[in-house]
Image 1 (cartoon, one colour):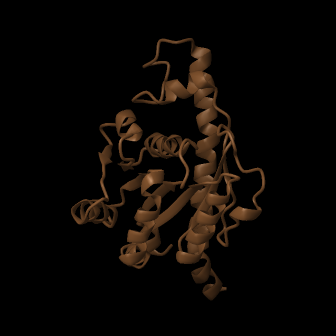
Image 2: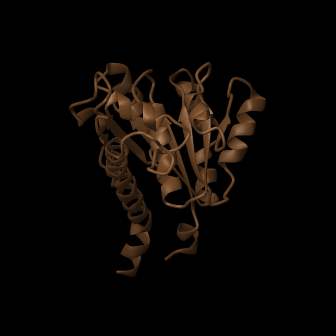
Length: 239
């Protein structure tokens, strides 16, 4: 295996141009996935006036501001470090356009490729005109950036058609299964509940763990597909 590919730094950018679609839930699940996998990870919360991810994971999350040059440099200087630390960025809907404008202006994808950083955009796909237009715009502006649609069955207007959310990459839409409110509240605690750290009935803990495993399996399959996509040119040359 190519040493550069084997030692890359994962960077997951979770986003949506709409509020209340489960974006922070997805960012939290990615963080829990890395933690369950024994990986070092760091999270960044870009949600003005509502830093929910930082509240849930205060020991792993940095609150970021991109309203001025100083804040932008502070954030992107950390995202471009090739330290093999898995990173999750929760981009608030109010910062959606500004974040990707900065990404384009600094040619982040080219620099990331040079440093073996593997950025992936996790886009909450809603059957909404603004959502589909934003997805299409990102696909045009960043043709080499993996763009993964995520269907959240817990959102009120989850996309039922995938036609507006196609990807040229070896990615298929991920799906977040419905999570009962009581279990969602449990997930928003500082740690994923286990029998050792939670006093509620073991059944509810097991339900949440089983639900999380279904999501984590999708994350692992996604990483494998993206890795295969990256290795494909080298494999074709050897054939």
